[in-house]
Length: 376
Image (cartoon, rainbow, N blue to C red):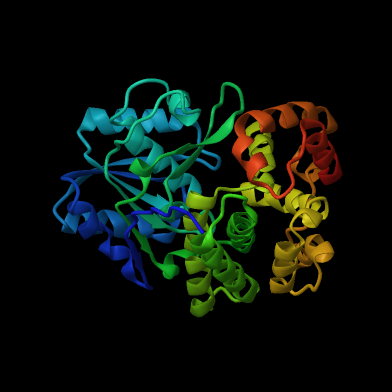
């Protein structure tokens, strides 16, 4: 047994703890750039709580509220310019995975020169970024627990992660109460994303004992609690369990990476701006059907966690869960057409080489194209 595990993130977990964000942010700077989305944190009142917390801690702040789903490299560039122009020395990201990813990219770009795409494709490297504090509002991406920032280049549709330890948050405040205002459809989508993180890290060829243990725990927590939360938005225990599982998912992919489902979804949402969890819902069962024989013992474990019994039935176990979540979708329903498949297959080879290689079965470009067709 020979492996490395390094993830220097400070996690503060518990209901009602979001208000601690201001004091935490004050430990790392004097002026914060608060990064959030356009609507949800304003509607729920969370943004007001965060600004009050920041003010109470003695910080000044600037607000950057232009982040959309599938955040763009250009948005991160705009946010970094605002941080530099206004003298912000710490970044507070408040929102779902897109907001947290963009906040991390902004913190990186604020102190690094050049084209962000060079850093994303490892043509350039840096080990510095502004300090980052994160407050997640969805239990899905796990961005609060890793050094990934997924961005889409609007010029060519490339959707790929900026990855480095410099953008691991100095502290993440995981408050399950912040998750309980999600609409059911969003909860289903982000919850399935969290499940995929845990499944893919568990299956990954570069996984190791720590990621395997956390992945298994995350899958079990999601299997036991996602439907509970979906059916009862007041179930605090279920949301707490999902929040923990989501963070586990983010932590494990930091070390074990993702595999083919995420690798194939990124070209789809990079091209059509579809909801990430819905893209995964269309692709994951199809990929399972064609992959289980390459790691039958692990696929059997996943199948049993989800209520099945056999490796060969893992895809169907996932479909049954998706049906209960009203998430049993195909790619056609999300605007993907047959004519898009050649570009997506080619782009998958470009942006998702690691995920392809980490998957239990390594598929060729032609085989990936056929998987897209089956998922239409």
